Image (tube, rainbow, N blue to C red):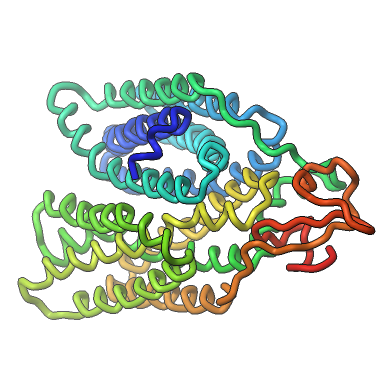
Length: 450
C-alpha cells in the first residue's frame, strides 16, 4: 500500500493532509479548553453549537466551491484555503466572547469545505490507475484514524509543558506546512470543462447534487452515508455517556473506547485494498452497511442488560465493529464517485459528496444527543438502528446488482472539439466511444444513442 508514496506529487499531498489533520486535532483539544474558559459549565453547549456550525458550513460552502472550482487553479484554491485556516487559528487564542468562537469556527470550516473536496478531486488525476487510487483512499482513511489517536496524545504531552493557547500555534504551523507542500508540486491539469451551458449560479452550485440524484450508484451512496452517520454519531456523541455514566468507568476508559473504534477502522483500511482488487465496491459496501444494523442490535443488548462485568469488553468489541464497518463503507467511496462522475464534473461531484454526507451527520449528531439525554440510551439505539436498517435496505434496492462499467454509446448533439469527445470516433450522425458508466447531463440514457 505504501508503494503509492513513490509518486512525488501524491507523497507531498498526502503529507500535507496528514500535517493539516494533526493541526486540526490540536485545535479540537484547544477549542474545548477555550470554550470552558469562556463559558464554564456551559462549555458543552458552546461546543455543540460549534459542531452544528461546522456541519452547516460544510453543507453550504462545498457546493458553492464546486460551482466555481473550474475557474480557479486548484493549487491556488487549496493554498488559499490553508492560509485562511492558518489565519483563523492564529486569532482563536485572542477571543473572549462566545460569538467570536462561532464566527471563527464558521470561517475555519468554510475553508476546510473548500480544501477537502478539491483535494479529493485532485488525487484521481495524480493516480489515474484504479489500483493506486484505491490504495490512496486507504491511506487517507488511515490518516484520519491516526489523527484521532495521535492528536489527543500529542496535545496531552504538549499541555504538560505549555498552556492550551500554544496548541493553536501548532495548528497554524500545520496549515502553513500544508500550504507549502501543496505549493511544492505541480498538479496535473484537470479535464477541460465542457462548453458553458445555460443556467445561473444556482444551477452550477447544484450540478454535483443533481448528478447524485441521477446515477443509481450515487443515490445508493446517499443512503450509505446515512447508515454511517447513524453509527458514527452514536460513537462520537454517546461514548462518554456509555463509559462514564452507564458503565461507571474512569475517564481514561473514554479514550480506550474511542481507540477501539479507531482500531477497527484502521484494520479494515489496511486490508481493504487487496479485497477491492478482487471484488466490486458493491460487494464490500452493502454488506458492511447491513453489518452496522447487526452491530446496533448488539449494542441494544448491552444497553438492555441489567449489569455484569462483561458489558465493558463487549462495548469495546461493538465499538471496534462499528469502526470496521464504517471504514468498509467509507473507504471505497472515492472510487465510486470517480467512476460515476465524468472527469470534467469530478470536483463538483466530490463537493456534493462532502456536502450531502455531512448533511446526514447534521441530522444524526443532534438526534443521538437529544434522544440519549431525553429518552435514554436504549431509545437512541433503537431510533438510530432503525434508521440504519431502513437506509441499508434502501441502498440495496437502489444499487443495481449488474452495474455497467464500460458502456459503448454515441453522442449526437455535442459540437466538434467538445472535451468529452477527446477519445471518440467519428461515425455517421455523431461520435462513438466507451467509458465508465456515468448517467449525467451528457448521458441521459445508459447505452445507445444519447
